[in-house]
Length: 461
View 1 (cartoon, rainbow, N blue to C red):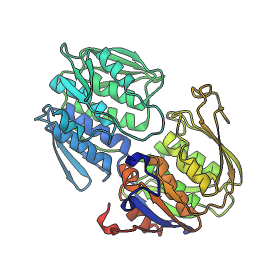
View 2: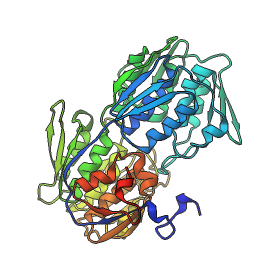
View 3: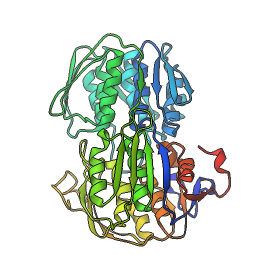
């Protein structure tokens, strides 16, 4: 049985966290740079002819994975505190076996293709991993790269790419404003000959921050209205110095944890601007928050005001809509609302798998293939269970839980902390450490009653 098929009965005990629930979370946590920006900013450093400096880098496993990928391609990478120094002046090809060390651990390798084609004229993609939350095929990446002029050869060991005639600008329209596809086009177009016009592009804050980085490097990128991005290719890019924007997903996760456990958490580093949609939802449910915009100690305090939580009808969407990665922790909080709530997932077709564990804990959640509570979406006629009805309030009780993916995993932690009794959550090292820095220390600092079955917490991030 593979690690991805592990059950609580077969999962390794050292990858398990014991949670004694029923204690409100109280205190302060600090969020650093966004996981969904930092890894892409590291890839962008490949394009430069001089070193880059990235600040507010979180200590998460995705950073370790990209660090390994950069190093096997000759990039000198050094981490000093939360500042990352990357020197790409000696970029070189890496062997298939070296790259395959990282196969199955991340989907980042596909984004290295454009920069490597510019720097070396060739690239290789191993088998890709990532969370199992729905189809995220690389075909649209390869299609875009072909249009730029790349030659794609699929082999048993992975996918090999070359650019015998260089890369040139294109006009390209995405069927859906995919973040990954937008990143691919940006990282490839900035040094392609001519002008690239990307229509129906993603405009998430992390995308805009990546554009800011590329602009610092010397790129010419114009963000027009109606999701149109125009990129004028340049011959050379320099290194950059940049502070990553805060992680709005982690901030919302701690906010939801405060609400579900009837606690109060100050999230230092959280910024109002990029969380406006979440803040509206948080207040609509009945949560309370206060924004501190001090440039040094600023953040947002989230708390449960002591009054009954209210049911809501929500649907996820691309920015500026409700972020799909906010969905899971919000659903846990909605199990404590007084009445029927609806969550319509329109971004990924298979993102409610985690609710089966919540139901075992006593949550009243039903899944439907219909588009409930909102406008019809692309999954509505394809028989995917992409709408959830949550009836509350539910008295959650402890259970043994198996984490299926990163964001669902943190939601399981929230549910276990809100539940009565002692839960055992499996897969915390496999998934949670990918995107949450020092999450155990943060939980302990908030008063959570957690423990490891064997090794000490001091030995873990």
